[in-house]
Length: 346
Ligand code: ADP
Ligand code: MG
Image (cartoon, helix red, strand yellow):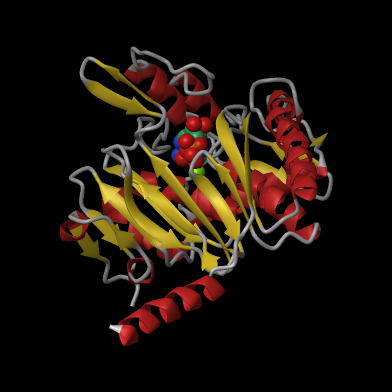
């Protein structure tokens, strides 16, 4: 009996010494059409408040500058694209367009930020959710025939020239990630070691929470709650594109905001795609690209984009995984039976 008591006390003492209390700061802001939450672990309250307000200023700037339709840097570019004359662009927009072009090429055009007119035709450019009806076949066909592509843009040191008036830039599938990267880079520059910048469930996390790894939940695309969890190691981004966040139903059919640039219609073979990558910008663009590539083509595109941590849930609910993400995900009970491990990544 005494031995047992000593053992219990010893265990209690050990767990006390292992668990250092950690101060966690978390605040949210509504920017770029979503709730952005900033979490710090082990940071003094005053510094945390200051950094939160710095990020609030930055995100407010980004949402105005990068909106394709409301006055700002990107809307200015969109206006000038129609002229087909060379014009100057600001350095940050230039950097974003260059990276987005590269990702568009790598994804064989599944990620195509030049389809702003198509997104507008579907009315997914609006803050409010459209209610249908979907656009006519003819209107979609006309826009597809005009072939807007990132390759239509020629970018030199200062100027941009466009050779296709059908191009309107919508960076919506990539700008959130780019902004999250900017926020994390700023925090790193300020000496922050342990933080999460979470934009509506898409996030980049650095460091740890005390002596524990950050644990991130990935949403079930068809049920309330979490499908799986993943522990963050070091500095990683986890981004998901899904058909469940921005959609409307019209005459019993679901129309969502991720458009297949090859058909002009919402991509239809997938419920959600999650990508893990160090860069939030790449993870964001890649999740959209693989969502459009769909159950048949995602492995080829993932390899082309040099991604090795992908989870794709198809329209039947089957969970396709690369081996590397499979080894890390901690699934909720029952999910395991639907797993299909990809053989394309050996
Ligand atoms: P979310 O922003 O909801 O996380 P995504 O990152 O997948 O989702 O971005 C979807 C947005 O990107 C759409 O609202 C639209 O503005 C734009 N978009 C839609 N289809 C494409 C596409 N194939 N390539 C590039 N951008 C797209
Ligand atoms: Mg995206």
